[in-house]
Amino acid sequence: MTLIEAVEEARARLHEAGVAFGHGTTNAHDEAVWLVLWRLGLPLDQLDEVAARELDASQLAAVRALVDERVRSRRPAAYLTGEAWLQGVPFTVDERVIVPRSLIAECIADGSIDPWLDERTHAMLDLCTGNGSLAVLAAMAWPDVHVDAADLSTDALAVARLNVERHGLGERINVFQGDGLAAVPGRRYDLILCNPPYVNAESMAALPAEFRSEPALALAGGADGMDFIRTLLAQAAAALTEHGVLVLEIGHERMHFEHAFPTLNPVWLATSAGDDQVLLLERAALLPLAAPPD
Ligand SMILES: C[S@@+](CC[C@H](N)C(=O)[O-])C[C@H]1O[C@@H](n2cnc3c(N)ncnc32)[C@H](O)[C@@H]1O
Image 1 (tube, rainbow, N blue to C red):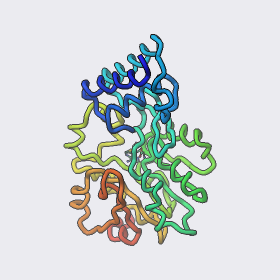
Image 2 (image 1 turned 45 degrees about the vertical axis):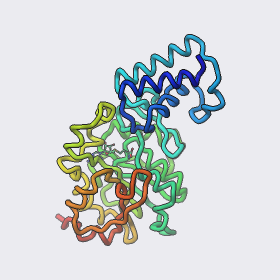
Image 3 (image 1 turned 90 degrees about the vertical axis):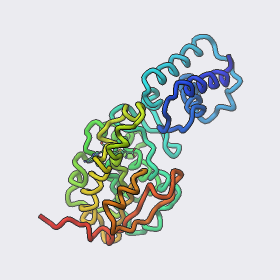
């Protein structure tokens, strides 16, 4: 069997088994390509060059075993391979973190945050850093900026540290553990990026098995998905410099967000998943929500 025939066999198997996508791929073909090329130790972006290659019996058995494992366990492919890509950058992943897929990565790459940054932009925070992917991408995109990365989960931070080291950014990214902004007391940032847990309870209950392989702490945002965000928006102004901005991902929760914060008028940043999943708030807009000091 040729490699491309093995890809087609894997595609059909994934399709028929009804596995869920959304962890780096959106369809059975792309996921099959990923699994087959990874199992064979081949570059993931060079299918055409190797498509006609004949697989020997042991290679074919290894590919089929991996696809079987994907179908049987329903674990995202990235947990089976230990690696995921975001904006072409590889990240180490395992079950301690969600698989990197934040739409904020697109906003970093396409320059849509840049109009709010200038020569005063020195300090940035990736809040809820998880696997550390946004901190790494931000440090790569803005080489003069120092990045702090914070998370409640010590397990997640262990993986974030692996990714900071993997990309040689130990000098530029500091990692902090704690609950929300309490992880970085007294610090002020020119930019805060945050992809928090925001999935509402009803959606959590309906998630496919692949998403239930991920830490619930990373996804569940309470009844309306806004638990973490409510606290964050009450505290964010105090953690931003005068010209600072918050970039926040809310996924499909716009309705709940607008219900919870009816007076806010955020700037919506366009993404491949829609124009209402990532928003930007300037410090001035956050001041009216600021919790009074104790
Ligand atoms: C949706 S994941 C985002 C991970 C990563 N930034 C990304 O985009 O792939 C949310 C992260 O928030 C963390 N988290 C949950 N509750 C938190 C809290 N109260 N304070 C800080 N981090 C929290 C979880 O551990 C998880 O790593």
